[in-house]
Length: 205
Length: 87
Ligand SMILES: [Zn+2]
Image (cartoon, rainbow over all chains, first blue to last red; front, side):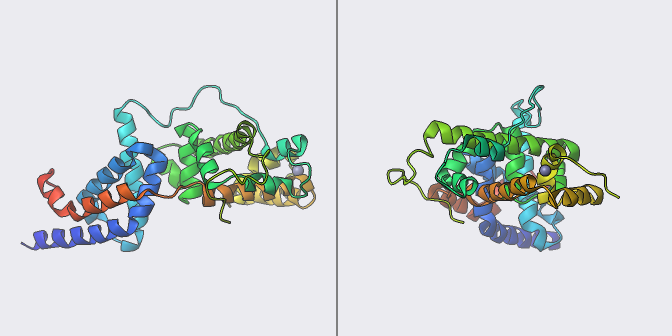
């Protein structure tokens, strides 16, 4: 019957959509779920199959899939009793990497020390630093600055008041800066400045 | 019009300003502060660099194995949903 045909057409377009969006979806899944990323993408696509009939505007599809992915991820955490939104009691960190660099002057021969400091981080370094942050802080940062969701979007995705997302992003950025600094110190990133012995790609910007 | 702010407040709002998420009044106060405060201009430029670091180096290259398996999964999606729960 007609409905059946429509469903088949929708499925076909979901398959095309899924193929086109797969790299982006899988990249986001890796940020959220690490080694469970593949399962997360599968669950996302299954859920998308069931609700594709609600998608009216094909242009909204990439974003629609990402929203589903974040929801599936969150539901999984809830079932496991781990709410990613739980905010630790304490947690006031005030750290300015800009000022720390100005004070500590780790690259005394550089005229453009702030930029050079960041330039010393390879892609792999940055990902290791990000990976050190707790979900609570890492996830909003990823959604905001890698995936490009607005603060309001993130509030909806994580079911949090926008003010909370705003302050979580603020803390998350400070923690990221702090983690960059700690990582640079621990790994001797700034010692071997020519770094011929360090494998891994340099930043591409 | 806008009340003057010091560096502490300016630094707190730096990223909101950078991301275009401040309301009109707060935005105006930031502009007024940045117009004379070199240090906060430096912080702003650096914050922009950090944002670029996240955007351009925050995501890793994807391993091929899982992507291939997921492509195979997508190929089978039509049958997968038939056996699942009905709408
Ligand atoms: Zn200032």
